[in-house]
Every structure is written in structure tokens, then in C-alpha cells.
Image (cartoon, rainbow, N blue to C red; front, side, top):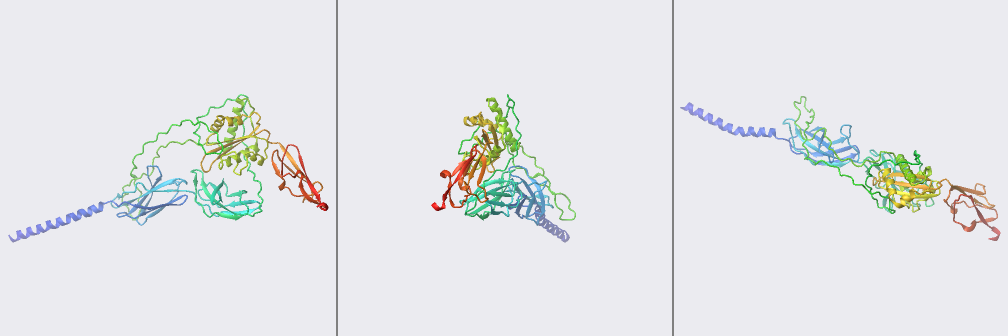
Length: 532
């Protein structure tokens, strides 16, 4: 009886112990199978044009962290890196496999993973987004010499062009978009400190880099003599000669015209209706499904961790294709405008226009100028005709300008649909043409110009005769040649000297004279010293 009771007591004690241990065992098993917590993202930055840094806060239950990224606006994540749990940040450097493009937004997120439980934690589906841009332009230098302020700067990573600014009345004014690492400014302010700034520009995404707000400064003397700016020559396009009865080739419907806010009304074609592309409805952001490659912190890892949620090779979502930009060069577009213009002239009974290099240079100067001021008045306040004289061209026959058209066909059609522009294009007395094409670095619009001339090569000469006196080079005359119509200011002419006389000015007291086809002679006038 005693042994039986003792046995029952022992059995009872065992059952109580079992009841106590079972919940503990279950709890331990539950804890072992629990997945890591959700990673809290702290910050994201783009320290360079090709680098992005992501930081996060460590979470419980994590043996590793898996970093994902995607192009902003897309749906699928791409795994780029698996790190051990000692890390709480990662810098992604652009590579062939995991590329970072300047001017694009990228989104990043991080997952916690446990190699023992093969569980991944939840993740921030929204992620953190950052915008990449060219590096800041450094080592900007400004120097004044011989009437020119010259700027130089170092190449900026991620930039293929450079925007040049000068500070006017406390605000930055854009001067030029350059492919080179230098710029010459002849429109500075005399007797003042001129301050310049340069910022990198990536034309592929129309992205501007950061800039030094202080810029670079140079003091220009009050007596600085500004030289006459001469435009850079452009390559001569090949102009096909139309036959007597050309047939205009069919053209596709033009892209809608973007309407600027000009001072002068540009020619604007009637936009055709463009069907809206059908965009697939977005689906819920997928969980990452790819199995991440686990690093080997131990000597013998057993199995690959079960996967989080983003896929390694996202399938790009079909997106509508925007209206294509012209695939021709600027020179080819200019040549095509001339060809199409001549087709319209021949149809109207006028002779085809001839290409002229001087008119072409003038047209390219005007195309750049109307990116800053859309008007037949130049940014310096002079009329458009002065650009011809600056380029050695005479006898201007009119100017056409337009903005927003994306093809030569579209802009010629726009001008033809405007009575004033049409009349200028079809003027039977015009003989020569030059065409300018330029893309605005700010708006991305295409700007177009046509410059016409009756006879661009008419030259003349003005002779300033000392009439008994001499100039500093011991000559008795100063001869100036140039295009007909160009104004010569007598204030720019050296005063001659004559023994026994005082220079009294040029005949008739003129302040200036225009160059004409025939040679013009201007005589000096003298006052005898004895009579003064």
C-alpha cells in the first residue's frame, strides 16, 4: 500500500512538472519561429551623381539586412545587396548591373532577415526617394583682359554641358549654355564688380547641378573698351536644289505647338489631336519574391534564406512613348527648312533661295537670342537687322521666328499658315537665306529663325581723310570697309594732327556715317592756331 501511494505521488509530481514545462517549450518554439521586425528607414542622400546612400535603424531578430531599389514610379524592386546585422547603412555606386542615371529619381527600401528561422521581416513599401544630379562646378575663375571677361572652370562629374550666369541686380541671369569649360563675356558692366556662376547640366534628363552661391567675381575698369562680338561660324549645310516643279513629300501630323509668351507673335500651326496612350492600370506593389543571396558569416552556411519580396529582374511596365525629338542634327534641320521653303516658293512661282554662310551665322545667333527674348528686338535693345551687319551681311529682306515646333515640316507649315510670315518666305525679291535652330536649355522648346537678304555681299568703304594732317601711323587716311548699311561712329576714329592747326572735327559735324556701295570720303576740318 505504501509503495503504491509512493508511486502515485511520483506520477502526480511528474504530471505537474510536465504541465509547467510544456508552455515554456511552446513559447521557446514560438520565439524561434518569429520573424524579424520591420526596418525603419532613417535617411537617403545622393552624395555624388553616381552614388546613393541609404541609412536605417537596426531591428530585432535580424541576422542580415537586404537592400532593394527601383526607379521611382516603377512597381518592382531589385535586390542589390545583402549585409550582416552589424551594418545600418549602404552606399550604392552605379554599376553596369545596378545602374544610376543622372537626373532620375530612385527609391530604396531595406528588409531584415534571419538565417536561422529563414524568415524575413516586413518592409517599408513606400521607401525613401532621392534625385540624382550633376556635381557642383568647382574652381570657377574670372579674369578681365583686353576688353573681355574670360571664365574657366573644372569639369563636373555627371554634366555634359554647362550653364553660365552673371549676377544682375542681385539675380542670376543666364548667359549661355556651353559644351566647353570656358566662356567669354563682352557684355559686362564697366567700372563694377561682375560676378559669375556656372552649374553643370545633363542634357539627357535636362537636369541642373547644384552651384556655388558666391560664384567668381572680377572688377572691370571703367574705361574698358568692349570689342564687337562675332558669332562663331557654323558648318555649311548641304542645300538640295529643287526642280522647277517639285512635289512636296507627305509629312506626318505635326506635334502640338507649345505656345511661348513672346513679345512678337510667333507663327503657330494648328495642333492636331493626339490620341492619349492607354496606360495599364497599376497593380498593388508586389512583395519581393527573389531569394536573397546570403553572405557567409559562418564557415558552413546550410540553406539560402527564404525570400523577402522584391524581384531581382523587374519586368518593365509598358509606358506611353512621348513624341520623339528630331533625330536630325541642327545643321540637317536647318538644311531641311531651306529645302521645304524652296518647295513652297517654287509652287508660288518664286525662285528658290540660295544658302548664304553669313546669313546662316546671323540666323544661328538670333536662334540663341530668342531663347532669352522671343522678339524681333535683340536682347541688347537693337533691331534684328543689326545681327546681319554684325555678321558682314547687307540688304536684309526680313526675319521669321517661331517657337515650339519639333520638326522642320511643322515649322514651315506654321509659317505658311501665317499671312505675315508667308509673305516674308515667298517674297520674290529675296534671293538668299540662312536658318537658325536652337533648343532652349530651360524649357526644352525648339526655336527657329529665318534670315533673308536681297544681296548679302554688297560692301562699301568709308575713308576718313586727314586733309593735310596725319594719324599716329603717319598715314593720311583711315579706310573702313564693311557691309552696306553698317554705321561707323566718328567717335571711334582717331583724331589726326597737323602742325600749326587744331583739329576741329569732321566735315559737317557728323557723328556717324553709314557704309554705302560707293566709296565715301570724310574730310577733317582744321582751325589755324593763330586764329584760335
